[in-house]
Image 1 (cartoon, rainbow, N blue to C red):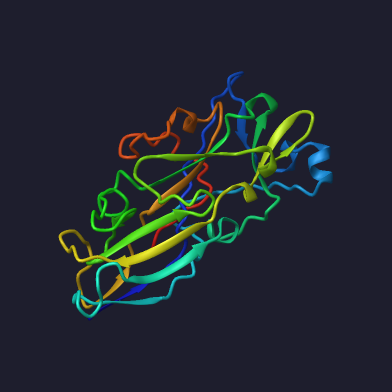
Image 2: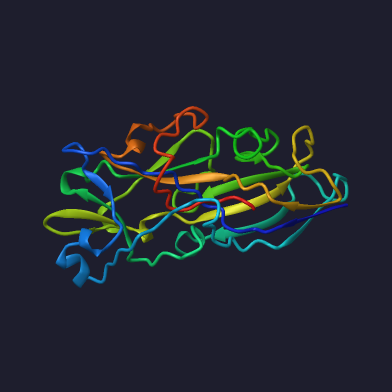
Length: 258
């Protein structure tokens, strides 16, 4: 039987949301109350600087610190869920939790109908999110031998995939006044994160009897997509392996084992 230790800090990676400078920029990142209208502030909304999903800014996912994996498919059949957790965006995205009414982005009124949550696995990384575990729908190879990770968007019920998916945001998820649309942290989806036994053992990084997972690459991403942002160029179904616009700055959170 294999045992491996995991410092299971957060699992929710949000890609960066750059905006163009000039008149074409209609959605922007919000970093303090000066971006908010009086009506937004009176409604209880707030803003502060946020640094997003850098390697040293990870929230806790809540998985066990020790997970047992057996190489025997008889003792521990393929498909066995080894550990699972619901990652709440507000508390799990970064080391400093978001509040439900913290505004992350501001868009123009005309942008309604063009605002989306994007999500995918880390499709350009073969070890975490890039290679599907064909024996298990929606799962991807992970760094531990005989282990795959599967993530589910709890708003849509869909599994994460290396091919981008999107969920349209609607007026019931944002605050709006006569001047702008404000996207709060509460607009983003929670995730079911599962670590699952697979029979395949042809790809892994850790193969010892006891392994401490220090691989700090994300397993998946959530991003905001709106006009003026680099992410607006990502279309549903695009392969994350070569379409990851806007990933350099302003990541709202990250999900992966460290």
